[in-house]
Length: 113
Image (cartoon, rainbow, N blue to C red; front, top):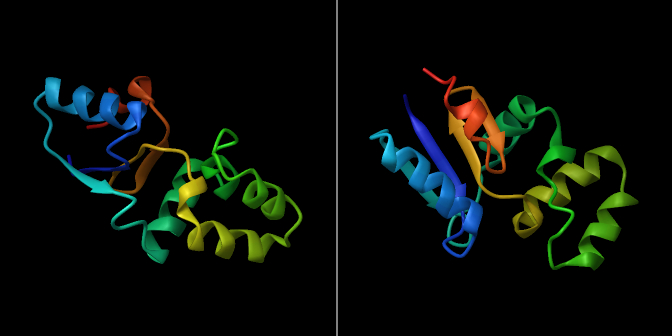
């Protein structure tokens, strides 16, 4: 298993995801999204695995103006704007190869082999 956790150090769900894998003795790599976000390839891979870029958007993010702007952009511009402003992405994003989840999803993770 090759697990990557994309999150922030202050996010409670990111901390819970780290704890989940640590308690089960599963090695993981933590990537702090404030220091280094998703690359374009990772972003598209996660979008595909999660079921679309709409699933990545956090409706509770602090930047309400950016959320409103994204609603009115064309489909292609939405993807680019989300990739540029990754602070509106819901965390944690947990990747295991081609599989990925957005948010705290232990029920999905336990089925990963």
